[in-house]
Amino acid sequence: RETRTFVTDVLAAPHSHNSTKLQLAETIKLARIARELSWSEIADAIGKDPVWTVAALLGQHPLSAKEAVTVGELLGLGDDAVAVLQML
Image (cartoon, rainbow, N blue to C red; front, side):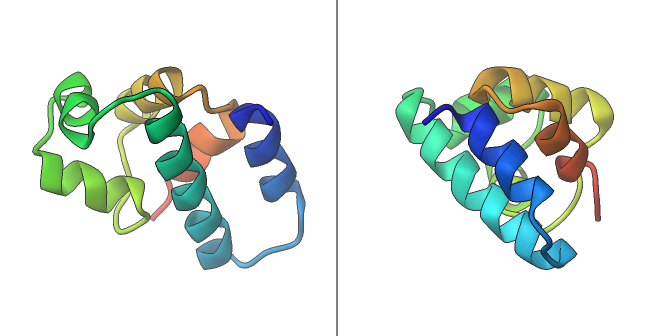
């Protein structure tokens, strides 16, 4: 199933903010593996430390709009997912 469709479905369902971020984190993990990207490669693409990047992508802190768009492009995420990545 395409990542973009899954994320859109998850974000359309009634969930709490934390639940949405947790589900997006799982989607990100699966997309990263499917695209054979390391956390370091994603970190390099957004100019951040790998530890910070993993924490952000697993929902611990937000990304800037530019960082979120870059991650979305790398992982095939939709606009809704990119928006969630920017939320605290």
